[in-house]
Length: 377
Image (cartoon, rainbow, N blue to C red; front, top):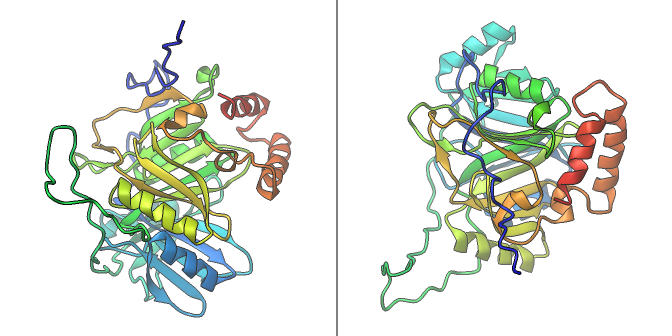
């Protein structure tokens, strides 16, 4: 007999939490941020970083001897700020305050100081430290970059809905023009404490929780978190957070216009010798079309398109975490994407596992067993 079982059945529960499980939002957050503003990195070779950034689809908005600012086509602030440093490292995210007074409120409640940002971006920031020791900026009154021309989605005949007649499709093989920064994914050894901190301080709300199979009663180990803008729909996740053996950056994602842009942009990157980590496919949580790449410094970056948008009324979904549950269709998740490809990164993660098990945090032997099952499930 042919097995008719769909391995994706039940992977995206929309029935919500069981009694006593995490509600996915804070009752009275200090502020509610509007969006992710930018990400900050340090890298030793800005020339190499710029070459990849242009191939990936960014536009350079500022370049000096010691700094590189990258933007998308949408109006707003730069997506990525890179400063010259002795080694490659992620510094932290910056979130855009809904109102300038929110920066003052955060500073007052947390005992931090409001400081001016560099003139290249303008405005002010309050710099906070989350429970994973990451620097988190909340910014306001920044300079607004004007919108740029961008790639337009192709006119597509869908089924019997004909919109293109006597015209061919010949999308150019060029870089996939980045429109905007979508989200960042962070790993933490203190998942619940860090999750609650973001919900309480920044007013973020959870779209989906994932838990290890057989360990739901021990609580979630990953959350996809969005901004709360009331009735205005926002990305399924602006921040995603996952329990792991080390506090680190996992990946960041940048929106492009459509599937053709994403696919042609991938061919453009391959022709220039860059390494695809995983793709092309469509996610389950968030529904995005995705394509993951490694930049020359080893950072994982994603092109995405067609993601889910939720308003504040939708409650969190709950689902088990599995490797097959990462995508509705597409190639299986690679060892590189899962962090288990033999090499320096895998050795570093193994060393982090050994260190984490010796410390007092949420990553214990039960969680390690759950994580090991993910890669083969």
